[in-house]
Amino acid sequence: MEIRQLEYFVAIAESGSLASAADVIGIAQPSLSVQLKNLESRVGAELFVRSPRGVTLTDAGSVLLDRAQNILNMVAQAKHDVRQAGATPSGKVVFGFPSSVSMVLSVPLAETIRLEFPDIRLRAVDAMSGFIKEWLEEQTIDLAILYETSGLRNAEITNLLKEDMHFYAPPDLWPLSTPPGTPVKLQELAEIELVLPSKSHGLRMLIDRATKSSFVNLNVVVEMDSLSQIKSLVARGSAFTILAPAAASDFEARGELVSSEIIEPKISRPVYLVRNPEKPRTRASLEVEKSTIEVVGDLVTRGHWRGRKLEPK
Image (cartoon, rainbow, N blue to C red; front, side, top):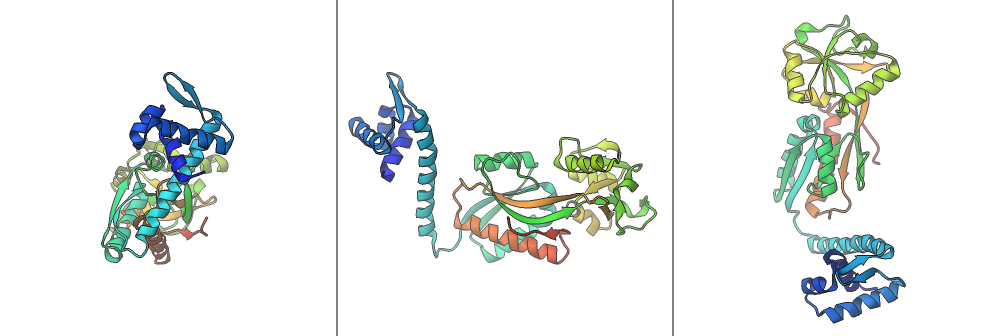
């Protein structure tokens, strides 16, 4: 089986007819027909059902199409990697961040890339995790940070860290008997008026699972899916909230919010670096991956991103 035969086969499958595929490839239709017959003989199965309107894949053809596309992608990637070997990393890398991660990671990562790899053009995109997953599947972004990876058909995942949720309040309206910074039990928050994301939001689902398992009923008086608006509402003293420390690092740094870690139970979530293995990995995207792991490790070590580093997955 030759690479050229696989290329011809994929062209026929995508075109839906030998005549159209022959035009795309630039060879005579009889020659293409001979190549297809040779391939069918080589694999020992009919790959297409012929009809006056064109061709459709058989079950065997569908299996081969999936394998052939993977093989051709790997061949293309190998050619690209050989050409790029030794070259200065360059080109655009599109990186998807949830807003809460972007708060703490996007700026130091961008500064690192600009300093160490000036020919790489990093584009950081903030979005909801659902959109980021779609972009990964569609291969419109190169890399992503996600809190959970369920539903992804294709994913190469690297563990980064685990975050523990904190309770947040303005410093002049701290509602608990213990001071900020002292761990607080989830039960102690039961009567406090909270603003949280809506029930379809990943953070809210995480909190709801913890409250259900602990038989705690929280007093959610406002639902709001905008991170910036949640923090502003809490800073104004209108309600309190539960967030990951990375999400509120800006307000804490300015002294507008203070917090305590929630315990009994801890409410934790992992943070993953994710890429779609079907999207060719450029030298530039590889360097951004490596830099991301290094920058995250440094942020955690220095306490700028409060979390526990995880072993690579």
